[in-house]
Image 1 (cartoon, rainbow, N blue to C red):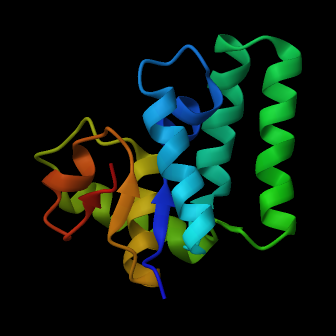
Image 2 (image 1 turned 180 degrees about the vertical axis):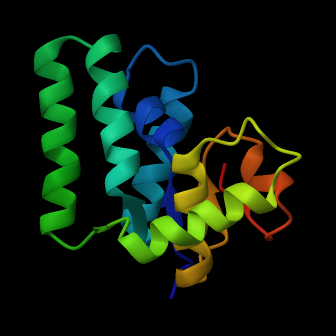
Image 3 (image 1 turned 120 degrees about the vertical axis):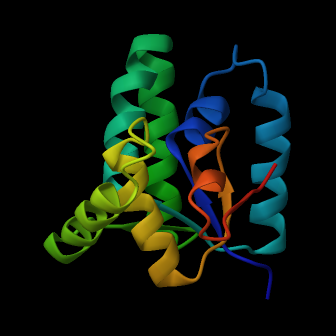
Length: 142
């Protein structure tokens, strides 16, 4: 079975914002994931960020269409949306304290790392170097 991929906010924004410089590359990658049946994961925190930023960058109707597509993918089990539970929040807080030398890592990224570690996901669709800097074995998918 193809490997799972975690989709970070950057990945969703590159996919959903047609004027993004990497839109076509990310779109082709996402379509290949769907074709090969790879499991895609994201979180409620990631979608929160995505909704906020996408509606600032895209016309309203396009933002709605894109987000509805994400929700449809989840309904069809092509995307798994993980929830940041209180236990996962606590684990991310422990990471926040552990990575005192990396103050620019967002708390959302830390919650993503907790879930990726829990699920055994190493590939992440992101341009965020923090996923590589933490020494947890994560790799950029594109």
